[in-house]
Image (cartoon, rainbow, N blue to C red):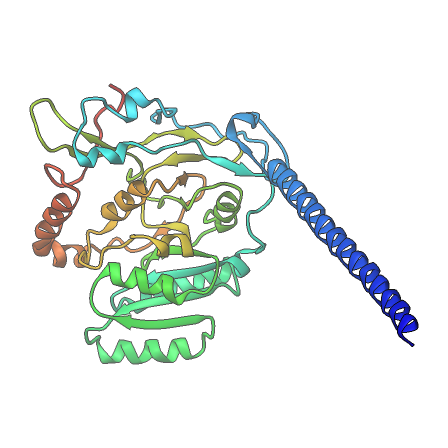
Length: 377
């Protein structure tokens, strides 16, 4: 029995060794195959990304493709382009901390296919409207949105101080019939209302709008969406129809012998003209009508809650400080329907302290100002 048992044990051990050897070979093959699949996947994704992303320097000035339409737009004669000339946009004699706003600009990059999966204004965009009980103005804007972009979601952020009960009840009856409108009230202040509007929206992009704007056939939100989806910009804006020149470049200037710079907003000075998108320029600031990447704006500082109004310049200083890219398209226009300045006059006594707060916040010598001075040195 002993020898037979030994032979049987030997056979069992031999078979076990064979099975273990086969098992390790099989596992090794799986590991090698796994690495091979990962390598192939990375190679394919990298190749697709290379094809999808490129530099504007490779785009012909009259290029035509799925994302780049032939461009017959003629830039206005009063526009200045810096072309990212560092001697111009980054003055060497500006040494203070606020001078960091001059740095970090790079040319816009494009994507030959959209950088996200949504495909229409209705799917991609929520319009957020900040108001203070101006319900008739909001209704006019809503009607114009429904005319040109039916089905778009709308967020209306109101202020919490007591409105006129008659107009307020009419407004509440109105929004009951508008399932696409989300209405909210927050404490006083434009900045808080803007932030809450962004938080309330659910879409990838949010269109920031004042309450007294009205969409027309020139208010081409599809173009703004097309631009932001095919570039690495975070903000794409448009002007109103009244020709107000609040768009251009920001620069900190530090005069000789001073310790603090001044912050100047230069009208109609842009860094680059984008030939694939008619009438679009790389800018640092523009008016209160712009499309933003919702999550990207919410990730960092945007609207300062302390600034209940006169917040607009501070917003674009924040964007510049984060090196977020902004594009201004004057081929898209929104109608500024209400010319009533009563709300602005009511706020005037409180304006100076807020402007001084902004100047101190940015460590500058005075209130950030708009200027028609020549930008090029």
